[in-house]
Length: 120
Ligand code: 5GP
Image 1: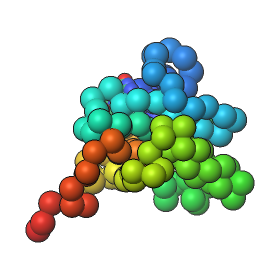
Image 2: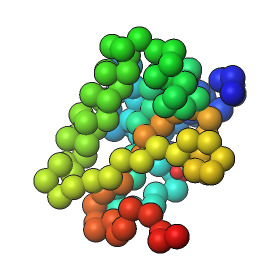
Image 3: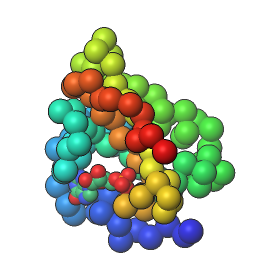
């Protein structure tokens, strides 16, 4: 799937839509999810135009990929959730219900999060 820069996260990156920022560097932006599903629910997005992890891993330079995951860890530290624990999750494609077609990692924390997935 080709990247479409009309998606909401592209608008946030361009400053056209506001966000509640947690962390930002050259490679990534982290901000609070607008519809939180846990007491702490933050999204970390790469600044580059990647639809998904497979897109990013196929097209981004290794240092860009590394810097992105460094930003995920740094965001967890800033949120103060290292000791209590947290979950990261990325929805990719239709079976995973990916809503926004700009790659993003969710960070959930702030309470016991229950089982990883509903039982099948
Ligand atoms: P996905 O289902 O694609 O993994 O998750 C997309 C997430 O983006 C959802 O949790 C949704 O609440 C969040 N989201 C959608 N639009 C906005 C927005 O305009 N601002 C923020 N902060 N989050 C958004």
